[in-house]
Image 1 (cartoon, rainbow, N blue to C red):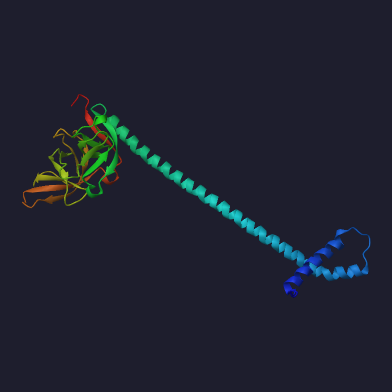
Image 2 (cartoon, rainbow, N blue to C red):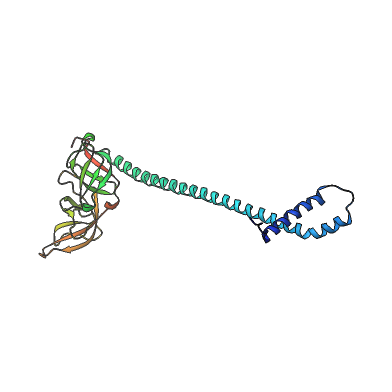
Length: 278
């Protein structure tokens, strides 16, 4: 096999090593005198020694920056994890805060009517997307004393009535459904009427079959009349937003916006009965 030629890189490497050795020789011993030849060699090798030092320092700088970059990446990763945890904790805290506000309102309302009615708190656990404004399911049933035709309400107003009670859950027919009609009356004039869900305006109610000259106007509040023995008298239903004359020209109806936000129902109260066993 022929000898391999030493390339330019090999020569450069040998020169670097030689310079390092000679530099160590001239600077490593503590001698009192240096010969002229040594001085000449030292002068000749000084540029090469400087180059070696520059290369070494550059290598140290490169690896230092590389390692520091890795440390920064790891630190950033940990910081992102901490931020995600803080955001998650903040979200949970906000949920607890909102729930606390709703439950306080529920308890306060329950205490206001405690002298007249027995009420059971319940949570909405299911909604049917295809019948969003028709029914919902609550987490209270027969074992909790819930029965068919019990009224379901919130501090803001009426929700509906129980139409089916299972062992530990119940189905509630919303007042928004046309079949969930309730007796109502205009609060300030005491004028009565039947309130039912509007088929034309989803999410709205209507008071129907009102005489043409009945004292019903926009922005009036409508409450329960107490007729029908399901909803207690005086509970809020909604406020009148518009008056329409019926096709026969003799009657009119009032469009009502409910006080309850049916899209965001989470907790309700089931009216178990009156204090006197009513």
